[in-house]
View 1 (cartoon, rainbow, N blue to C red):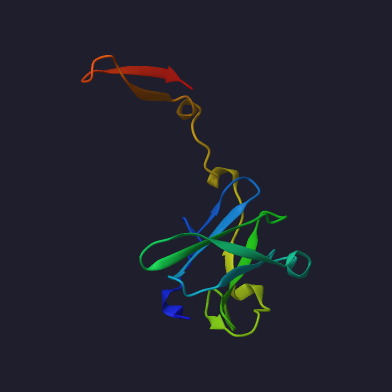
View 2: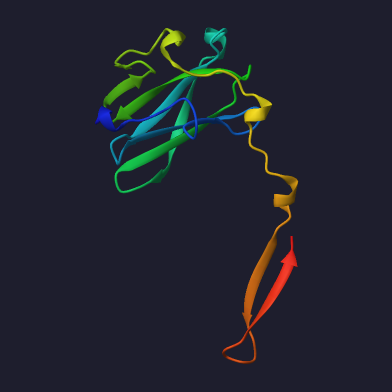
Length: 152
């Protein structure tokens, strides 16, 4: 397992509010290096009652990296989390401060998503929902095309 290639930030496109109740978590790792990725998640003030192990799935790859993604619905709209990384029989935990062999027991050292605020959730403008699509169809003439515009 190449630990130097593993990357996550608790902000931007690596941890973001998908909707009012859901947080998406993403992680990057060396291509074909990991067999399983899980996120240990919970609320920092009710850790024992809300602790859960959430699987992340590989959602894309490029020439060097695999990208994993999972979604969490924290009951109190705030989240602490760390990652369980597996490569065959080998496994390691990734927290915000380090990699460790044992499951982290202190939420204070984990990544944090402080709160899902309504202003942080992306909602497209109403005008963007109305869009035009243009389709090209061959006409009787082999060089001409007819344009059909319709609103959705």
